[in-house]
Image (cartoon, rainbow, N blue to C red; front, side, top):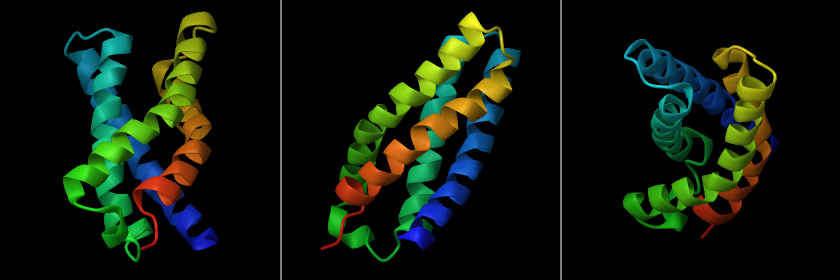
Length: 127
């Protein structure tokens, strides 16, 4: 499980880069900080699902069902982590006036523990 958690963390780092990159592009295109973040989060969830399925939980991927079903389960269950993630982001950006990038990083860390447990238990479970 430690190896999975470490791989999950690496995948989360890639997800952070996708999240931050899409957010910065959305802001540059005129989107506001909140809707831009919702878009960037969706891009990051899709990326991390694919990488976690292929690498982190590769030995368990068949137990969770079809890819579309797993993606849906992953996206829904990650809403728990998203609540911690986006809540942390919104507090830091809105109340503390922190720049969006460090706020994305803090939000990502806040949601990671929830997301690992739920992904391991309900999305990429053993047969």
